[in-house]
Length: 111
Image 1: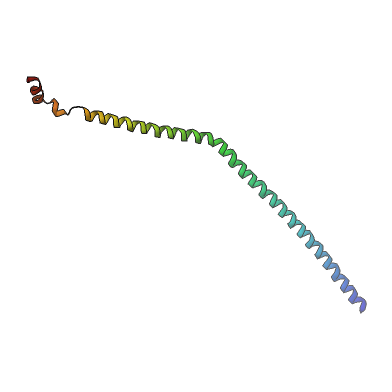
Image 2: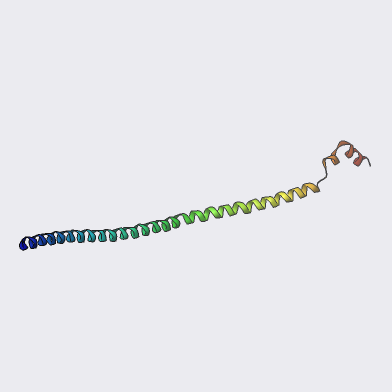
């Protein structure tokens, strides 16, 4: 009887040892998969940041030329406004069309 109990206890210990070994291998696998996941996460963000920097370095000259063209358009618009203002001032200085009417011309030349 004692021997049967001892055999039963030894079988249970063997079962526990096997379960502990299985559990240990599962935990090692999880730890390794977490390491790989962390490594790939880091690589992914390195790629994303690198692509952002490369994209900006490619687009930046284009962006610079577009902003320069826009600023040139603004300057030209301001120059055109000044020119139009000068033309309006000169037009205001010209005699009115009523000064060139037939009656006014007759009066000027008959005096």
